Length: 252
Length: 263
Image (cartoon, rainbow over all chains, first blue to last red; front, side, top):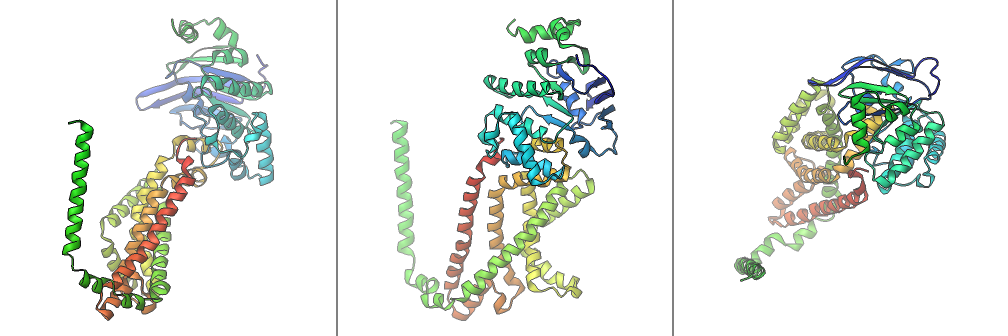
C-alpha cells in the first residue's frame, strides 16, 4: 500500500443517493489518496457505478459532501465544469464522439475547455495516443475501431486533459473477452506511472494485482475494504466471501 | 394449386387490370384538346426567359430565406422544448401547436396583411413578410424534427462531453447538434421540399412583375394566354428544384451514414 500522507485527493462524507424511493447509496464515507489505485467490486445493483458517477457529479447526490482536490463538488456554486477537467472518466460503453475523428475526440475538449492552441492540443493528443499504443489510428473514425481500441482511445481522450485522478466505470465489461487484455494493460501501465485511479470492475485478477486497496460494496454500503490481498484473498465478511465465490467459480 | 402458382396468377390479374385502366384512359381522353390546353408550345416558349430568371429565382430565394429563418427559430424552439425551465417549455409547446395547426395559407394572409399594419414604422418590404411567413410555417414542423434528433443522440455522448469539462451548452453545440443534424437530414430535406411548394402561397400577397415566383407567374400567364400550359411549365420547374434536393439528401445520408450508429 502506498503511504497515505497529506490531504486525500477525494474525500466522500455521508454520501447518500436515492432514485425516487430506491436508495442506491447510503452513508458512504471514505478517502482516496494521491497515487492510489482503488478498485470497487460488488454485485450489480450494489451502487458502485453510482458512487463513481457521484464523484464527478454525473449523478447528483441526495445528501453528503464530495471534495475532490480541495473543490467541494456538492457545493451548488462550485464551477463544476472546471472541477471536472481534473477528473478523467472512462465509460463502459466508450462514448467516443461518433461524428469526430480520433484526433478530434482527443483535442475537442482541450481546445474548447482548456483553451489550448491547436498545435499544443495536437501534440498532447499524439502523446497520449502513443501511451495507449494507437498512434497509427489518429485519423481513423471511431466506428472503424474495435471495442478495445475504442476504449483505449477513450482513455487517451481523458488523459489529454491531464487529469489528477481517473475514474473507470466497468471499462472492460462491454468488450469481447480477447480484447479485455489490451485495455487492462494500458490501465496497469497508468497505475505504474503513479496515476490516481478509482476502478469499478469485475476483473478480479486486475483488482488483486494492480489495486492498492479494494472496496467491496453491496446494497449501497461499503461492506469491506482493505488491501487487495486481504479483501480478495482472505475476506472477513460473509457477503464478500459469497460474492467472490460466485465470481471466481461461476458454475458452482 | 401451389402458393407460388397462386401468387403468380394474382400478379397477372393485377397487370391485366392496370393495362385495361390505362387503355381506357388513353382511348377516352380528348388528346387534341388536352394538348392544346396544356401543351401549347408557343405559350410555353413565351414564358422564357422570365420563368427562369425571375420566377424560379424568386421561388428559390423565398424558400431559402424562409428555410434559414425557420431553421434558426426551430433550433431555439427545440432547445426551449427540451429545457428544464418550465415557462420555456410551455412557450415552445404553445408556439409549435399553434403554427403547426394553422394552414400555411392562413399564416400567409395574417402575416401579409398583419405585419405591415402592426409595424408601420419598419417599412417592411414584401420579401421580409414572405420570409417571416414561410419561416413561421417551417419552424413549427422543424422544431419537432430537431427535438427528435437531439433526443436520438445517446445520453452517453453528453456524459462524455460533460465529464471532459464542457458546459451543457458547449456540449450541445459541439457534440449533440452535429450528431442530431446528421440523424435528421432526411426529414429536414423533406421540410425543405415542402417549403419550396409552400412558397407558392406568396402569390396571395400580390407582387410586382419582378417579385413573382413560379405560381404567381403561372397565374398571370394563364390570364394573358387563356392556356393552362404555364401550369405544366412551372410544374417542371418545381420538379427541377425538388428532385436534385432529394438526390443531394441521399448523397449526404450516405456520407454521414456511419454517424447515427453508436461508434
